[in-house]
Image (cartoon, rainbow, N blue to C red):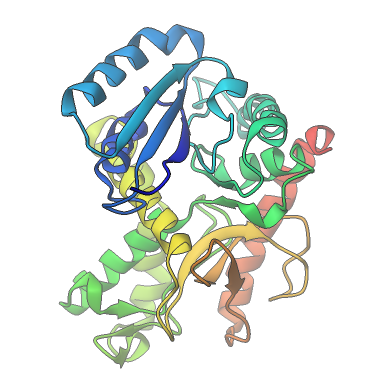
Length: 328
């Protein structure tokens, strides 16, 4: 049997984690032959609920689960962790401005970044899911100076999946037929879902759909899908976010097939597509299969695409400025 991988999950009693943990435990994320130790973090008021989740995990008798640790101490949760999923974050409350939300989460993710730096395995891979994910990821990364910045990513795979689904439905095809789609920028309503290089069942997507639909209904639907789900069910995306989290980790864990790519927010080095250095920005990504990756370069961008990407870039720069005092 393989050595178990220590997987840390924050916000472990929350909605997303409730869908996520059972997928991890069943082997869907790291493989059907990979044992795991689950290290679950919650805030003190949610510990009783977390104990309930642990009881359910126990009752499933998952063969791959070697141990479950439940704690409100990040140093315990992140001890020797190799895969860390930062799911928990402060939700926006009534009357809360985006600046207030950023500042509240900055305090959380700066503490978690420091704890990761001091306790996690040196080969740790960190995925930030909790919103605002890109800037929360930047805060955690900057507070973990001993960990390679490339080991931190933020999730835009949910946006990628939403865009795939919309394009597949519009063209009457299956999501498996959609290739070459990209999400650029922030995981927010400024993101730019791009089908300029996409294909559907081997045909250029641009020849299968009307450009007015792309620039109107398609982009708007993907950008505002989260709000639409809240309006419809009274709660934010949970199962779809958990599924996208699994997809994201699998994307980085496995080598990307030739000619394909996926979307994820990674540190910008200032050398590609004119995106300033020091942002967590969503790009098209190819994985080398060992946790390392490369940004897909040299995709031709239209003036429309550049304009949309700049809007998202400007938002990320503004977010970074709000939390600059916590970026060590």
